[in-house]
Image (cartoon, helix red, strand yellow):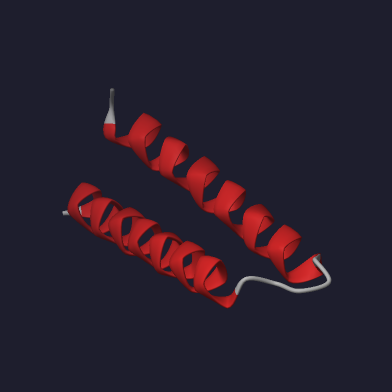
Length: 58
């Protein structure tokens, strides 16, 4: 898998997590722990995307 493919796969995961967060928030009684966990994972993916893009540009 090329770096570009990997970045695109991470972006897709990031979007899926955003969707999952939105769905959880739309529930009558959102699970705060689940939302927190999803947000942490989303941030980890964003950090990895940023790192890969930075490495690619050097």
